[in-house]
Each structure stands twice: as structure tokens, then as C-alpha cells.
Amino acid sequence: MSEPYLRMRNISKSFPGVKALDDVQLDVYRGEVHTLLGENGAGKSTLVKILSGAYQPDEGTIVIDGKPVGFSSTRDAENAGISIIYQELILIPQMTVAENIFLGREPKTKLGLVDYKKMRADAAEEMQQLEADIDPDIPVQQLRIGQQQLVEIAKALSLHAKIFIMDEPTSALSDTEVEKLFRVIRHLQKSDVAIIYITHKIEEIFSIAQKVTVLRDGKYVGTQSVQETDSGTLINMMVGRDLGELFPKESIPVGEELLRVEGLNVRHPTLADRNILSDIHFSLQRGEILGISGLMGAGRTELMMTLFGAPPGQVISGKIYLHGKESRISTPVQAIRNRIALVTEDRKLYGLFLQLSVQMNISIVSLKQAVKMWFLRRRLEANMVHKYIDQLRIKIPSLAAAVETLSGGNQQKVILAKWMLTQPEILLLDDPTRGIDVGSKAEIYQLMNQFASEGMGIILVSSELPEILAMSDRILVLSQGRITGEFSREQATEQKIMAAATLGEAAG
Ligand SMILES: Nc1ncnc2c1ncn2[C@@H]1O[C@H](COP(=O)(O)OP(=O)(O)OP(=O)(O)O)[C@@H](O)[C@H]1O
Ligand SMILES: [Mg+2]
Image (cartoon, rainbow, N blue to C red; front, side, top):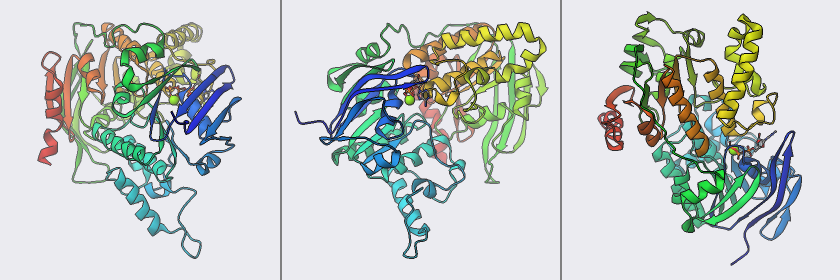
């Protein structure tokens, strides 16, 4: 067999309190899609950040095309033909799509000024490659997360790299967007690009990759050819223990009504003649897990934000009843006071204060209670924080560590712990398992069961149909801001949900 294009050997890297990588190796050939697999905090992102020049290794060698290399900056690595899509989006919200794509390498006119016309045209071309209908002139903050992810991908593509690294690129993409990305990846493969692809979605490995390397606790476990392995083997290599059942749904008798929504209409933030939510009616019982399904952009996140007192547009009409009493929830503070919690897909919004410690982030919304009965609560709180850190398997060097130093999946777990600690009555989960490894997913489902059995009502939004089907007692389907289907657990099938999810689409 020929020499690998990229050869990483004996790579080690420590951070204060953690050995993130311990003697890791990776070989990647041209025209190959090579997946990195491992639990949250296993060291995947750290390994690719060393390759992209963002971190320097403590030990180890990198050889590209037979030549030893070392990168002291990301610019260095870029010049050597390496391009990376980071797990955490790093776009600048106020800048346009085109400005973000060409940031720091804007095309210039003869006079040395930024050639906006060319920049816009080039950006449009990159977006077209991804078959994405996104206006290059729009500020990035106006795009939903999935679209921002596409801009990030377009930015990386525009570098025309020889080694292309993607760190969980599909975590916020819809199924059709994933298909488009896969077409682009196959195209890159044909032009002999080496691709490193990180994902927690094991089925993706089998549709796009040829090789998979597994890491566990910063150590190299092994490399397998995708053709000669199966998901059971990979999960075993990854977690080093038996997983048990992924979806442990328990049947819990539903109790009294916690929440009822009637005739909710929310206007589009910019288009005056359009609604993002129309005529929404539903209720939620104690002990119930209500699933909400629908395509990207169907209004799922908008509904959750509205219930949390942060509607993305003007509420024109609608009543919300809590325990049968009409209530006003017009700010997140009111929502929290009414014991409503929201776990969002956007970690930076209502999610985390990245520079603050894990301890602070987890207890911040519960602090008010802590002030009330200081001594008792402090002890209790510390116990609860520890309980969730254990149960969710959150990997942290210490409670004082800044959240921004945690791995992506562990940050998501901190958000979950934070809201669980408030002991809400109504828990709104918007894609809660995004970026979370399979082992921890099962733990989260266990916790959902436990909370439901204690009388909590849970609304679960998820783009993963198996998750919705397995965990929900009842499923609502949204399409273009309207409820287009409602199914009991027994009735629901993937086909029925998809049919309802595309109902409004066809009608326009
Ligand atoms: N800048 C940093 N400072 C301190 N610790 C860090 C830093 N970056 C990563 N770590 C630690 O290194 C370990 C590996 O993290 P890494 O981000 O590589 O995990 P990962 O495999 O990408 O996980 P995930 O699937 O959750 O994204 C974690 O324990 C993390 O807390
Ligand atoms: Mg990562």
C-alpha cells in the first residue's frame, strides 16, 4: 500500500488538569474519508486542532506528503493546504455571509480596496456548490444555526485545501442539507482530497467514510476499515463497556394538565404579512413527554422560545394556561419564575457563559433559591451539582474550570445539568442530545424518564426521528408554523410523521 498523505505519530497534549491526548496516531490517505470516533471529551477536537495549527502538541510528529511539518498558527496550516470547520461556529454575527467567508483574505481591486462585487459573486458561487439558498449580503446573525453551519462549510471549501477537516459538521443540518454536504464530500474525494470527519452519528460513518479511528480518554484504541466493521464493534471500542438499551422509555401515567396553549399566532420578525407560528393549540400533562417533530424551519425552535418568554417575533394572539390559569410569560425571567426551563440548541443563547466556571454555569439560575436558605441550599446544591456531573458523565478537570475549555458535548451536558438543577415543572428540550455521544444519550433519556415519573412535563424537539418516536408519549408535527399532525405513541410511524411534516410544504 502507498504511503499515507498524512501521518500523525505519538501525539500527546495536556491541559491544566487533563491529558487530552496520550500517544495518539492517525494515518489518512488521499481520497479517503477518515472518521474520528469517541465519547465526549475523548480528544477528537484536540487532535484536529493540533493539525490545524490552533494548538501545539507537547510531543509527537506530523508528516504530510513525506515531509515533517509543524504549524505555529492556523494561518501556517492553511498555507500548507489544511482547512478546518470547527465544532463551535466561529462566524462573526454582525458581518455578512460574504464577509465571513473571505475574512482576512478579501479579494482586492486594482486600487487595493476590497472588491465587494467579486467577494459577493465568489461567496454566491461557494453557496451554490452546497446548493444552499443563502443571500451573501445577509448578516450571519439572521441565519438559523443550520444555515450558519453551511456558511462555515462554504468558508472552509473556499480555501481549496488538500486536507479537509470537519468537526461535527452535520450537527445542525437537516437531512437534505446533509445529503448535499455528502455530495460535496464525494466530489472532494474524487479530486484526491484527504478528509477527516468527526461525528457522533454512527450511521453517517457507514454512508460516507472508508476508515474510522477510535479514541478513548485521550488514547488511541484502533483503526478499522468501515467495510470490515459494524456499529456494535465501534461502540464497544469507543465506550469500553456494554451500553444496554439506547432508548429506555418507561410508561408513566399522565397526570393533571400543566400547560395549555390556545390560538397562538406569532408574526415573522421582518416580514409583516407572514407568521412564524399560526393557530397553535396543544396541552401538556404531568408525566408526559410530548415530542415535536418537523423539518428545519418548521417553527419548532420558535415555539419553544415563545413558551420560554422569548418569542422571535411579535405575539399577535394566543393564550397560555399554567395549571389551568391564564398566565403571561413575556420574558425568560417570568418563564423561570413559573418553573419553565429551556435547553436550547444554541449554546451561546440562554445557554452558557463561556468564560465562567462550570460551577457558576450550573448553579446560576438556581442562585436565587440559594440565597433564601444559604447554608442548607449551598450544601444541597453542591450535592446536586455533583450528582448531575456523575449521572451525565460530564468530563471536567474541576468545578472551577471555565466552560469554554470543555469539549463540545460536555458543554451541552452542562446546560442540561444547569436547567435540571432548577427542578422545573415544564422542561423544554430543543435538540438536547445534539453533539452528545451515544453512551451519554442513553443517560439523558434515563433522566427524562425519572423526571417524568416525578411529575414533570417535558416537551422534546428533535431532528432525530428515532429519538422522537422512542421517547414521546404523544407527537405533534409542525410544518410552516402550523400543527399538521398529532399522533399517539402507538399510532406514530416515521412515514406518518414525514407525511405530516411535508404537508404545508407542497401547498406552499
Ligand atoms: N483549551 C482547553 N483548555 C483546557 N482543557 C481543554 C481545552 N481543550 C480541550 N480540553 C480538554 O481536553 C479533553 C478533550 O477535549 P476534546 O474537545 O478534544 O474532546 P472531543 O473528543 O472533541 O469531545 P466532544 O465529542 O464532546 O466534542 C477534554 O477533557 C477537554 O476538557
Ligand atoms: Mg469535539
